[in-house]
Image 1 (cartoon, rainbow, N blue to C red):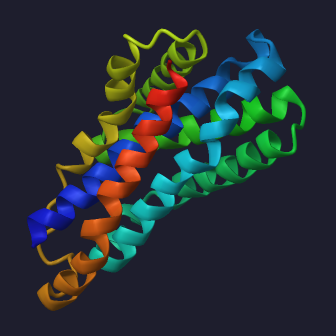
Image 2: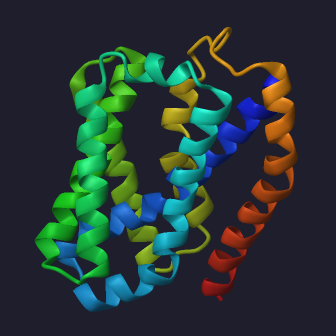
Length: 207
């Protein structure tokens, strides 16, 4: 059961960075693109992509109630940066605010996740710029419709943090086995559906 929930959390996390990653990449590249065209291309996916993050946070709180403290330890300012960037980015995109606000929100989110990556790896802070670069490349591939490269850049954007996260020992940080079993009845039918719907949308759009 523990392995199942680790796989669920990993799937949701990878899905979030693979799909929301091109949203942030679009935001980072927005000052260098035709604003309306770029936003129009990402809008059909925008809210759906963020659902992955909401689902991952829900799984984290439900199945890994003690892992939250482990992750937040020493990284409160990083998560504050990510959350502030998410709010700014989502508001700026939906309200069609100035391009520099969209860019600023995307930069805050991507640098925040980069700082979290550096935190997990106990690496120097310049490692934080890995995530903005990967998001920008992923966004460029999406905006230019280079679909053969999309799986490659999706993997590059998705894997750094889950791989770094795997170095954490979750022993004793998960919920009770009975709780995990009960939650599985909800997660098992829903999560494959979310994965199928999201990738179907991307596939239809790429035609």
